[in-house]
Figure: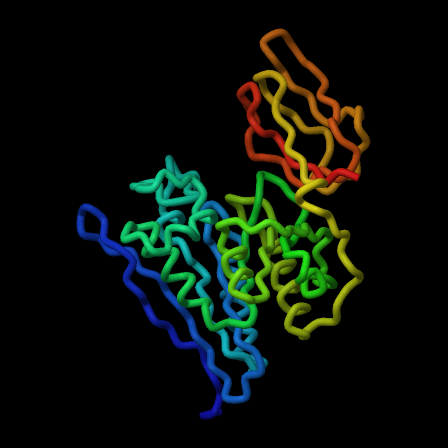
Length: 303
């Protein structure tokens, strides 16, 4: 049909490398004439977090097929520099490994640099400008070497994060310089999805992410509510007591009790059982299998 609304692509320049190669940002816009909502969808802000990229490409196709009444700006691959940051084929880029001018390892904490004329400042300003007019901002991430899906939402926006088929909602109230926090401070509904493990993509991960978006936009019915946790008091990190080789005995998402054996650490002196330091949910495991002493191993949601 001639009146079918399609996404159109605009390519924005970011910066050039020493050889003159150009980094660019592809931005896709869909403007339905009966749009009832302005949304901004973003994936791949961290270069190692891949699942959101195919989820958004699939969802853009679905928006067109269903002719959803939206004004939608979408940046599926929002950090091409981080995506290119690889060592021997392994994704390593939370930032831009090539330069990292501002010593910011985590490019989801640089909202304060938006007025800087650096690579980081120009990049984050571009994303913040693209999302400025949106009513809703959905930022698709992944986390850890294995995780159970969860959503970060401001305490005032918990209702919007419910019923999406995501087991856990992590509620925050203190403002930071993350992308979603910066958008939230502008008065927007801003949710951060942690869809799956980092550095890998499976069809099940893509389907789960798509279903969360379908529920958010009313294509699928809502599910039962997620469990709500307070980040300030209930999100806890766990660190390696000794160096060694780590072998987990439980999966992410498992309910555990404090003192329950959950892993084996093979140290220089032999095997040492590791017991859960908390009662609650093992939210995610970090990807290391050979931790240094005091290196972070996991995050828990504690009861």
